[in-house]
Image (cartoon, rainbow, N blue to C red; front, side, top):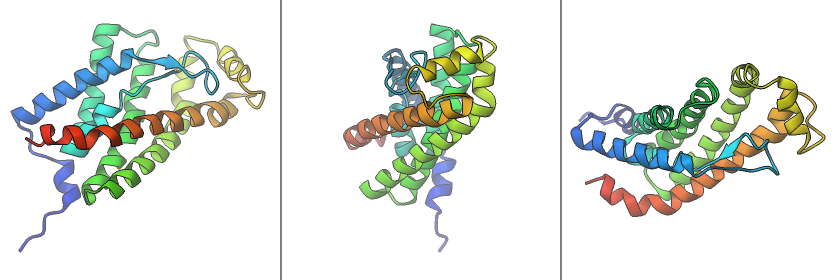
Length: 206
């Protein structure tokens, strides 16, 4: 008897009209949550906003597999550009998508290996760590240098220095502001996901 690999089956689920409908609905919810954002000025500069728009992608990834989560992250960003526009030439939106995927994919992969409260918890913790590491590296080498085309790097670093004197350059901004910000964001999204998933999963599995 052939044994079905739970990870492989979750990575490449059969696309159906029902699954596309669920992904679309979750993407719209994620877009709405993006509008409910706010600065966390005790950690990061005020142009960095906190939201929990990754929650629908996490829920979709848990219910339908990692690629569903990636799709929700992608559609969310496209919808944001269409309806909200961009003030960063797409840089912020690209970062949102990549960092969101770095969170959702490992979390949902681990959960699909063996679906339980414990693996969901472990998956979310791994997702937070992966997201934070990826965001730190991508922000330092790619995203923030692109931001500098719209805002001088000195101004960006100074915004971090106003929060803590430990910020003296771009790297220390990553370590003392952006990494804690992403950890906090990940913890908030994870907490909401853990509370909501069991309540909405019966709907998503119909």
